[in-house]
Length: 388
Image (cartoon, rainbow, N blue to C red; front, top):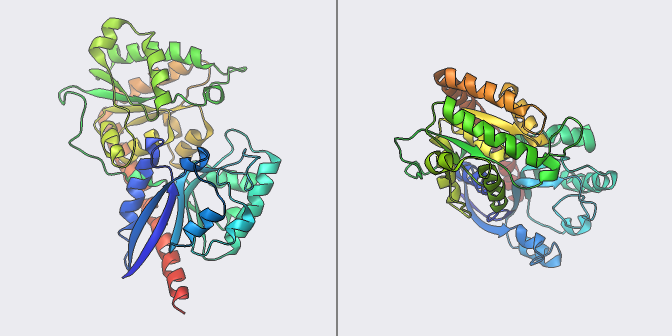
């Protein structure tokens, strides 16, 4: 049994979806035969908050460990022109070369959703060349269109050397005893994103702005409560900005409905909190979700799910899972009709939809286990090399 001391650079106190990813990832990592992992977390937001830097001290820290894990997370963005790599991993390529242990880029998102500037793409291409030229490094990207984005913006020659994997959040384990709703009441879980509103709701021709969405969605919530099988709606925030959007929706719903048929889940963060929050999705009769992990984890938990799509990665996530028919383009005129139609179909075919999503969840989980087998082969390979 080989002990590997790993430094894990990721988000641990940010979006609770990241914690869902770590939940599934750690469980499978610790099941890899022949290895025992001792993992030290390093919060990536400390670098964004200017409390730490990708400098010589970072390299010195990494070199004390046997392995550096980066992610999961959406860190291969393609708009960060001020970054030496064109991404959120802002380390000088020459400095990266000084890192001695293997580096595992774990299920990262290659995200052109906020732009993909030529300069950022060039810098990322140069950085990725250095990473992939060293066989001790392993790069995987997640199931949100990242492989397509990599091929389109960086080059197919790079994509062919990168591993595709479902995000590990699909394998989340939850605290089944946790609940905030009377167990006798049936509820729908609704997740609304409150960040990047101008990107999500551009208000250009054919698209609506966020205010229009909020007013219209409030009406849809009322309609679903009166027509459907749910006694209640449970809004589930993932970050604090989601609360502003939830509150804005509630401001357009009558007080008599809010007080009797709407609740809001607690806003939790940090290790272990994901087991409670995603348990709320598991118990819902239907999830209607805007965020990546709200959708992915609901499906992994086998829950019937409708995506409120207003960002590229959600559309690509559903395409890669073969679930396009369960997408609603939430930033386009007339989304209300599409959402209500899908809701009515779910209400009429609830048993069939539940079975279908249970099977789909198992299918994606099996795909994740396949990707872990590739990680296992890589770990065995670099371990054998280090022994010679």
